[in-house]
Amino acid sequence: MPSLDTRSALQSDSEAPIVRAYATREEIEYITCTKRFLMLAAGRRWGKTDCFLIRSGVRCLNNLGFKYTYTAPSYALAKDQYERAKIHFQPFIAKAPGQPKPEIFFHTGSRIQFRSMDRPKLLRGNGEDELFVDESQDVKETDFNNVLRALVSDKQGTITLAGQFRGRDWRYERFYEPGQRPDNEDYKSWKHSTEDGIAFQSEAGRRELALVREQLPRAVYEQEYLCLPVANQAAVFYPDDLATISHGSPHDRPKPGWTYIAGVDLGWRVDFTAVVMLGVNRFSGEIDVAKAWRQPLNSKHEVNAPFIARELQRFNCRAVVDVTGGATGGKVPQDEYIKHYREFMPDLQPFTWTQETKMRLIKHLGLTIERFGIAVSMEFKDTLLKELYAYEFTHDHKTKGYKYGAPVGQHDDLVTALALALWGVNLAWYRTAGTGVTGII
Image (tube, rainbow, N blue to C red; front, side, top):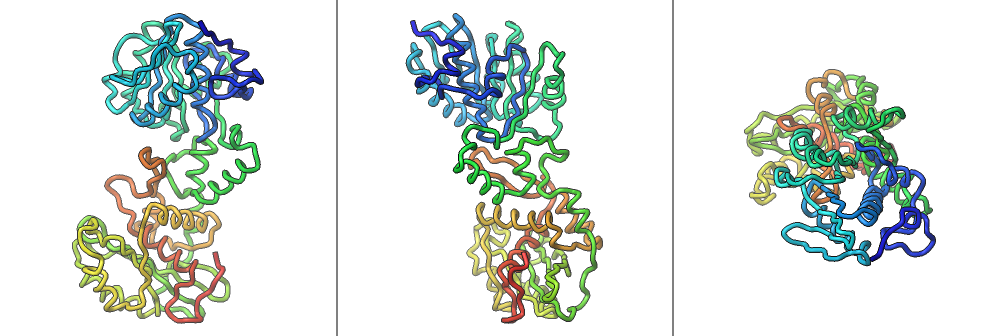
């Protein structure tokens, strides 16, 4: 009967059947910890699931009849880890049925089951010796209290909460903080950034992280990769930065030496049509939010178009217009609504939103705010600034990307319009040839 020794699994130079033949000092500290309540807070791709595979293997192969449960927010993620574990544990497996639930049974009589939190009540059952909760930031506190905690009560088993911080949430208060006290006999916690992970110590790994840092807003990178428990875990733009850019004054009329460009986010019944006009000083390069407003809800495009065009014309201002759907949900061809704007603004610059372009524009907006490269008058504190403070991101497990937008029940139309206008500044999409300033941002 094959067995697995902890030291050889972690430190042998020979090829190991579990993940890899070595582990870092930080990983070994978690893998060998004997306390009951563990929180492993680590940035993405640091090596949390490698730690799970090594730790679960050591326990299941060195103990008879050990019961281990791995949980994830979705069935797809749980199934991925099951398939990965089958490969690494192959020499020790007695059987590994995928139905009715993915499980691996070892020659020692131990087993690992892979479950999802799609329907938490289905996890209720016999007591477990150990539970690993992956992506724990997406687990509701009520589901933990009512379902997961009870799984280890019969056997006074061990729980690991793995993932990133979401501010100082229930996991931070109930598990991370107690785990930081050396004299606590039951709790232990760790915090590691992606930059410390094995995969990112090479030149290629460091280059990859540098690219990620460039592509993501600072708040996203600090939460997901540096694993920092920021105060507002979902905020894309830092309140201190927004306070710093809150100065200047709107432009009632065109100013000599300034060039103007506007972003227009189209809406109709649910969302507003929003307009943000930026003024760019051609000599100093400073950028002001000259105007920002919303058209009334339910106002039709054929009414909004001439009104917006007249206002922009006063400033000789070209518009960058969102042509993704006109708030029609993609049910109406673009020409059915964009034609109204082309009639009054024939040189408008069309822009189509995709997940990739949105991330690029929001990242550009975030960098501009961080560098204080824009001024937003306090006269917009109840409109544009309010939306900027509320703008947030969430992790999308289906696409493994990020969603940006306003909290439920709020609007982000002005933020979108601002991002469009700023992108127009970046590419010098000005109305009159020769008046644009390049290389400002």
